[in-house]
Image (cartoon, rainbow, N blue to C red; front, side):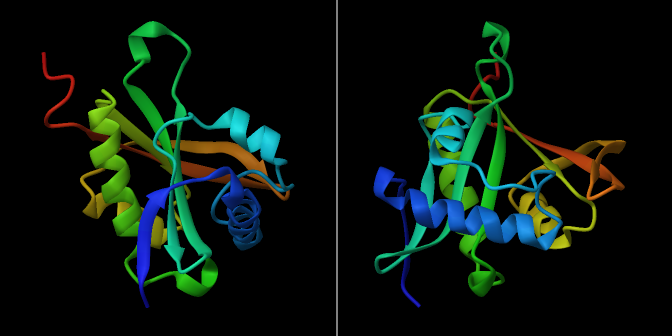
Length: 165
């Protein structure tokens, strides 16, 4: 399998949304239960640091960041979203995408990346911890998914090169 990590293009949008829908279907990726339109997706995520894992002309995973806040003091803080095609999990694609995101986000001045992950999503928890994220808290019963209260584990990664002074 020859997978390359590239910048996301507008032409990737249908495949990105399809992979997002796969994540919704697992019940362990997001509180979202309905698909987003591209306009909604595009408006939600930052214009920078959007990457896809591509196997030939097929997108098999994606990663992007959401601004943490519109307040100026938080300009270097972002939330990570990462989704891998169900047929391509466990192949190291997530690690490659997250590594690329960390590298490029630091070039853009981000000093903190955070993630909110269901504790049941052990693969995502492990992926983030291997990339240097640490648990900073637990949001108990923060929201309902399909009528069931769910917890979210908060993780963060602080840059060792950006935001030190």
